[in-house]
Image (cartoon, rainbow, N blue to C red; front, top):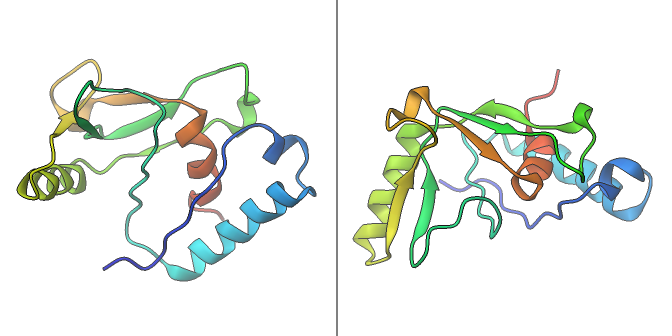
Length: 132
């Protein structure tokens, strides 16, 4: 069951200007997300790995945002993926006639794969991560 949905920006201003409207909005998004207590996150983005003519679904066991010119290292996201959920998404998309494929990085074993992600996924995930 879907318990939360949002459209979120990505980019360093959310970190450089935390008191600006976008930074405050992302903090509010994080609070609402935590209150919804989702079991998993499905992030849809036009960024990252693109597969011509297909919807690429990341099946990797780990997601890792690497150093880039947009985000300071302290805000880079690293966290778990969910290969089983990803496989279920691929099947559901294909059952609806959509051209979906599962993708991994460096290995075909999803649990052993670490998918590099860009700021388009990393920024929203950084705010949605589990917090102490």
